[in-house]
Length: 451
Image (tube, rainbow, N blue to C red; front, side, top):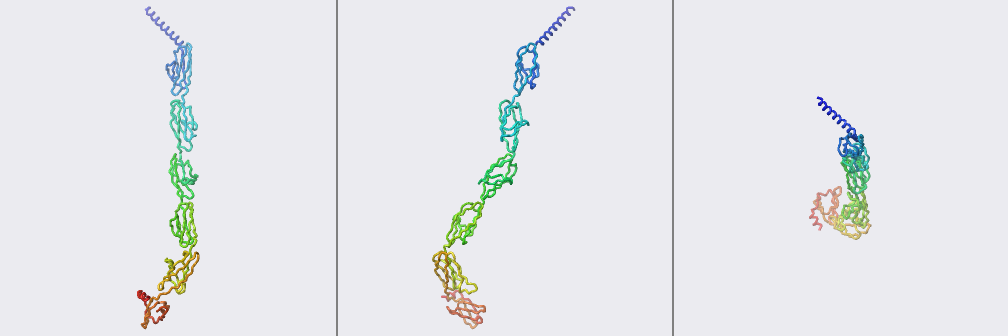
């Protein structure tokens, strides 16, 4: 019994000594309390990974120790700590975040930059304080549709971003042939071609170009936001009009040696430019000149033709004579008003060239006559021609006494009295009371008797 108690006491004493010795060793070991900013950094001590901070590292021997803090997205921090026997110390390690380098360019330049809704400045912009991670980059400028893109910073490697903004309206780059046309858009003046019109709202718009002498150019355009349209309008010249008048009239008009009619003549739809005009009229000297037509011009050009001819005034006895000059029909002489047809009114034949002309006179019942007339330039030749009558009976008169008279009927008055030329120069008057019948002679009889 005593032996057993002895053994138990020995065991208890040994345990106590062990506890005391362990306590002494613990009191003699070193400790480091590690705190990091930000927290949760992984702590290494002398290369051995520990728990995330904050952490107490115990059982360290006196001497130098290397404490390292590591956290994703932050620069690694190292601190060397010298410990004395049994020393307890605390250390705070501040980790600096790893930031990226981003250079932002844009078109147009000077655009506003936002990152996750925060304003960062205007392009071109260098951003050097963004920690690693994913961001939303927004670039905007007045008159342009804003653009948003994802920005992912993985490391310190510099990044360059080019952002092209599209206008929130349309743009027109206009020119015309020829240049200098006045431009209106939706009725608002926009200058002269060539020109650039921007800030055009999307949708339909009415474009018009106007230049003096040219037809207006009109077009409805359908434009979209951001669209840049380049166009050239070919303007059409408004045709000109030329009227050619000649004095005297009825002259033949030639344009570039092409016959275009007798004056007065109007020539529409002519392209502006120079034209060679010639007027010709029998009896006048030809006249030609170059006429210049401007755009959209109505021009009247007068040609006064100089006469190189003369005039023939012809009277005949009797009237009613057909006149031919050089074989060309030139008219018929007319009896004077309220007179018999013995002598005619003057027949004026104009535009006869200077020199001799052969004039032929023809009338039924008369011998043809042919005379030569000499015409002088710008003078009037006066000629009277008496024609010799043929004796060709054309009428037969029977009296109540059964007498028959044949001859040329020269007159029947209002009372019915008949006058016949029964032989050349011999006339017979037959009272109306004696006329039983008056008959025309047949052509063959007349011709036979005329012989």
